[in-house]
Image: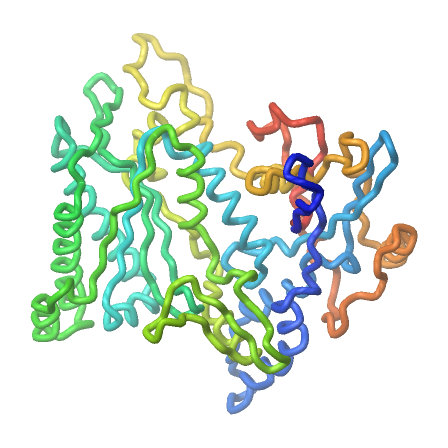
Length: 475
């Protein structure tokens, strides 16, 4: 998606559909994917699959994403007759190759957590990084990842109780955790980002819940959490036989934290709803940022880093095949959760309904003497957002507003038939030739994704015009 702001600061931003085939990443995947797959197959038997099937599928689906030649939706203004075409997306999983689908998943996740899960209370970001010697095991063992994350949050919960006046020994935290498997230069670097409500919740005997705000979480308190996590995690690695006892004892005595890093300096106030959503976008961000990739020449690509490296420059110089190698290593296997809930926000917690943002109140009073059967909790609904509203949420531009007369544009058709696609594109002056080297395969991907967004389930639509939406559309 592109936003045109050249008309002036006071003029409304104009939506311009993205052109993925013009990006550096698309050209790199299009021109070098088959060569990269052939190189990966060299030296392997025919029965082996050097590239996992889900990785190859993510690359091939990316080549179809946002391409008008693969089908599109047609939007029209009923007042002036203005038309424009919206290409279908590949509906990536959010941690794949496609930057557009990754960004859409990031924004949708942050919007859902802000609107439906987190209550209107202050939150704090807790980040845990471990020494390189331990990252090797965490990167390859999902069970060990979960154990390390639970250990970290238990230590945070213990110190939150100690700094929350009036809390009891059974008080629980509320947290949403994100496992990051990447660093700023597309390297494998597993660490944890956790958005934790800055306090603890106590259940009352009458069936209500009380929130105790944490106070005094300064640098010494964060250092105490780090020391606790370091001691317990080294004990876990030694108990599982992954680390010799002597090595674990030596790592406990290392100076400057011994490679363990815990940060809890970022705190968002309860009234700062926009700041909470920005923090959640940061935690849910994908491993790859398209705007950091530049092409120096056909055989050299530069990926710019936001953090300086050991020599002062953190940028990464890659060949196209090396870039595909790094992207493939960062694609997670299927059925991997993007985020996890802990404490009172866990799915099986009896207090979740009372503390989520869409409950009747943020902190519920005791129930009435003769309570009526409760309806399905509101946090179970509206987990998906219309693509146009996500764009308006972050870019302050609404795609389905006519740029000529300001009227409402409606989706009048979804076109997948090849000859019809070509005829409409010729009529509207769009290029008709698909990108070269685009893979020729079976039916389009969008035919298997016919689920449409229900506008009545979206709370943001109460203040929006009566537009029509569909989740298959591209950014």
